[in-house]
Image (cartoon, rainbow, N blue to C red; front, side):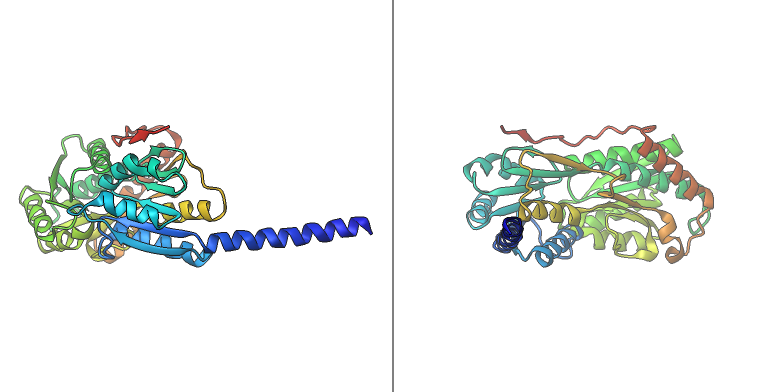
Length: 342
């Protein structure tokens, strides 16, 4: 009898605790603070999906707030922190605001996405996206040199177009160059930058410049300005490497460099909702764990109408295996931690 009472008490306690945990998750107030929350920005769209998934899974109270660089981002950050239990940031300028202000909100938890800030109330998720960029550079050079693009001539230049220069972009570009020149040491890799991640006219103009300089494949990393740049490259007869699993023009896309920002958002929210928030931890997601993806030309070949030689796919798979095994080691030019704030 006594044992049965103990078992009944434990079962009741588990229900109470489970209910309390569910209630705590449901009352969790989460703010995703973005410089450019427009769904036309592929990175913002990915993070919104992660937040929506967490909202469905845990019943949290979620919102997306804009903190554009031309406004007072510190005030926007402080207002978000005062009204939230968890605040997520994923832009370079907001990373600095987080570093400088998180200690003023010790009871608030923060998620830092795309760089590391090591502090007791901050959990960070960053990416070894140089791995996918390396494969993208190799793919661009392989396709360009194979002469399988319309016109049949072998190209000797590939391009890289970004919205702004950031540590993340610099690191990816360096790996892109390394991948391209592993395939063809004389390959010219030309880089141009638009005025910002939202200036579509500037991005289209820089795409023109890359085509004028002989680029046959252009990696477009311009965020909300992606569409304008991709369309201009297509109009000029070029092909692109994108930054989303949902490319602007699949028929003109050779490959994609994908950072699973949706998973990063979901993982941090899940940790907070389940009582597993790891303050002070910096997680680096890779090709091997699926946090970074390289969508190869094989996925787009039929839609692009290009007959890509099978040796291109087999060579890319060899390089992927070498990255996974450590046979190829890439140097990340990211800031590994923006701050060890302990």
